[in-house]
Image (cartoon, rainbow, N blue to C red):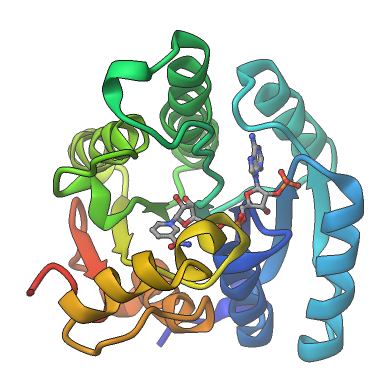
Length: 253
Ligand SMILES: NC(=O)c1ccc[n+]([C@@H]2O[C@H](COP(=O)([O-])OP(=O)(O)OC[C@H]3O[C@@H](n4cnc5c(N)ncnc54)[C@H](OP(=O)(O)O)[C@@H]3O)[C@@H](O)[C@H]2O)c1
C-alpha cells in the first residue's frame, strides 16, 4: 500500500479540469501537492476548493510550462524550500489551432509542441535529475490522449504532440527504469472540461463521440483521477512505459 504522506506530487495544469481532479484526489489521499499552471488567480481558487475537500492546502507555483527557463526557475524555487517531487503529473496542454493541416501556421505548431512535448519533457527531466541525485525512486504520469493513437482530423498538430508524448513515455521509462523511476501515460477520451467545451457543448460533435464509445457518453474529470493515482502508487510497481486508454471504450469502437 502506498503511504501517500511520504509522497510529494506536482500536477501541471492543476487549476481546473482533469488536473484539478487529480490534485484533489492526491490531496485527499494525504500527499503533499503542488499545483502548477500559468495563472496565480486560478491556482489560488483551485487551492481553496481542494483545501475545502481534503482539509490540506496545496502549494501553488505559477509556471508557463512551455518555457524551459520558467521550469528551471520553478525547480529552483522548490529546491530553496527543500522540496523533492517524487510524483509528477504532466497534465498541462494546449491546442490553439482547430482546422485542417493544410491551413496550419507554424506559430500554432510551435506553441503546441512547446507546451505539450518540450514542457512535459523538461518537467520530467528536472524531476528525474533530482531523484537520481538523491538515489530515490519516483513515478511520472504523462496525460496523453486517444488522439495520440489515431488520426485526428482538425486536431492534427495536437494529436502529433500526444503521439510524441507516448513515445517519450516509452523512452524515458527505459532510460530511467534502472533508477527506480517509472514513467507511464494515460490516454483520455472526451472529458467535460473547458479544454473540450467546443466539442462537448456542440450536440453534433458530442453525438459522434458518444455513439462510437462503448459507454455512449463522455467522461468527467473525476473519472480520470483514480487511474493516475494508481499509476503513481506502489500498486503499479511493475508498470512502466505503458499508455492506458481511459475513454469510455472509444478506442474499442
Ligand atoms: N478534456 C478532454 O476531452 C481531454 C481528452 C484527452 C486528453 N486531454 C488532456 O488532459 C489534459 C488536461 O486537459 P483539461 O481538459 O483538463 O483542460 P482544462 O480544463 O482546459 O485545463 C488546462 C489546464 O492547463 C493549464 N495550462 C494551459 N496552458 C499551460 C501552460 N502553458 N503552462 C502551464 N499550465 C498551462 C491551465 O491553466 P492556466 O490557464 O492557468 O495556465 C489549466 O489548469 C491535457 O493534457 C489534455 O490534452 C483532455
